Length: 309
Image (tube, rainbow, N blue to C red):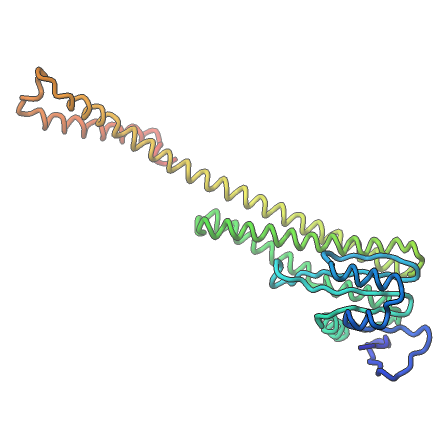
């Protein structure tokens, strides 16, 4: 599908001619791009990079820029991302996409944006802006999610397994998002360098502006990753405190019954001349002494606040 840029994206028919120098945006599948543009080095490089695309990138070649986008889906950050490539020269912007996502993005961008300038580089800048238009809101909601997780941990309303899984997932997702922002930052910085003189000075200024935005997003993502790490450490400290409390309680129980164990061991020897064996009140006295010891130890521990620790 081909479009002219005239404040809106105007479809161009298959038999319709295009004037030289007129800005054209085209969306093709990978095999269509290969069938049409397979004689140049940059085309081979684009297809090769797209087949093993793992991250967003930009390469400035002779009279063109090529690259790829690997965009994580916000609803499934750890799932399969959206992957497509692009080729851009002074008059053409070609998206190589088998997923159909680029066409949806361009139509959505067209609904909210008027293309005042008929430059493909300006459209590409608007496309970059579209990709990150909701990222600040996304990060704010994710921060609220982490705050809620922290509240659950502090109040003890979370199961141990659920919290561990949630924290691990949050760290993986934030690592994915932060990496994505860093990749877009590298793309914009590469385009700003413009060492093949492909872009106008005003285009470089736009890409520099986008770089500033991406730096802020990278910093925000880094802060959230550190926040998630702090929650993990806080959760570990909370679990250690609970474990220490349990061990302290078991220690006090052991201390309370240790004298009784001594009495039981002492009178369990059954020597022949032990005077208490034949005493009529021996059992009652032993029971009274044991109870007195228990009450005394409980009073002592409570007085020193050991039950409250």
